[in-house]
Length: 97
Image (tube, rainbow, N blue to C red; front, side, top):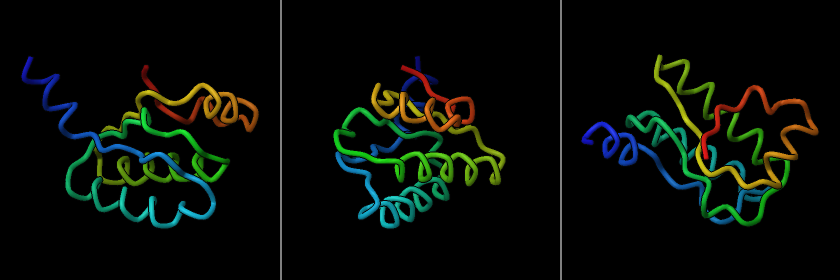
């Protein structure tokens, strides 16, 4: 049970909006959390997004991989999952519902 709690504790939330306007700030904030040991992001709060969200998620995954750490994206909104599929990057994003 403590492993599950640790996994949840090491995730950060995406925020409600991840669009072109907010992508740079979100990207940098996520990098700081990953550098501090975060191993995932919870996208449950994400209500407004565009293709920039995919770029940020992929960049966070690459940053975690560069540190040799796993990175999991949970609760990806269906619309963003569809967008990832349309762009052909759905197989690059490690998601869990």
